[in-house]
Image 1 (cartoon, each protein chain N blue to C red):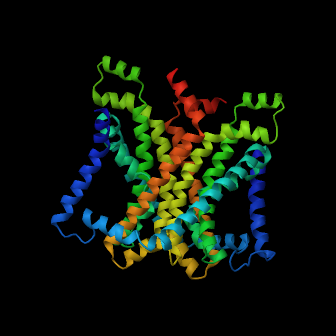
Image 2 (spheres, rainbow over the protein chains, first blue to last red):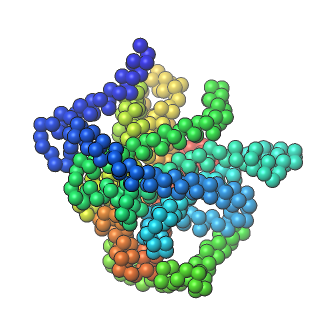
Length: 257
Length: 255
């Protein structure tokens, strides 16, 4: 009974929306909006074939490499800058500026510097995604609890052990907040770098559909980008819950008290 | 004091490195002009009306999009957030729609509006709406039960309860959402201009690049960064002002 009720809550509104969409499009012949049935069949025809190998997987590969390198580089640089006081003061204004530059303007710059290659697209993703991770890591490292830091020092914990058991865990929640922003920026940049300069990939294919007025195919492209976005956010939530298990537990205890 | 000096030293060091990389031939000046050239190009832009026209187009799209998104998100957020039934109904839909990247809508925007400001607005509103909406939902859900019941037993009507209990609780969340949305809106404004070609700084960047005005392109990029910094500072100031009564800001001032 309880599960059925939950299911009804979860599926009720989406079902109503699809019904409204179906009712709205079946009668009138609207060029811009396909019917749900047509969209589903176009979706399977368009994406479950050769295209998944030639366009979807390479795009996802670039996204994965780009985002992962951005996260690793961001955390490493953030640990370094965050723990050295003068370095932080030295770099802060420059980093603030780089964070404020909208990442898509880097596409033309990197196109000039690196020509149109896979490396350039990965570089676009890295150069856009690294800032939220970097700045959040710096902030997280800076805000380590003073008592914890002093206790670690008193017990003679230093070097790698200090990073592993003190710095990383206490900066963890901040770092994960940065990673969450980095993921959505990465997806945006993947699409834009392909829309701008490419002959393959998801972004290119979708723009191609739009230019040739293949409207149902274009919609199916929008749907697939949406599905990738949703999948990424689910994977992130799962990983975050796993990595920050202790933190969520702590929060629950604190909230209950 | 020394922090400021170090910060300025950092900026100068960055500019010096930038100046030296093309001068020493590590990257050809054709692709990365020295900092002095770019700053000179930027100074050359300042007296031009076309430049300020592009800046104001971008800022107009940013402002209109952000305002519309915030207004929509606040109204919907308060309505949905204050009813547990609506919250449960909409949860799955919101969680599905929110992660959809706004750039996925670019082809649709082009098809519907072409290279007009409406295309930019559509992307900006979609992207910034979720930032604010989610925060407002959290904020409205965070209302203290005791405060609510106190207000109820003192006979406050619904409107007064929203005004004096719900709104102050949700305000810090709302301001966080608006701050995030402001930078997202700028990103999307520039993106739309760059990719779709609606008028503004982004289109000027694309034009400068394809016309080979490389110093000009870097100067325009510098401008977008400066606009971003100004927007961040402005939003922090607004947050400070509107939340001057809130403990998170007050404790910052004391320490």
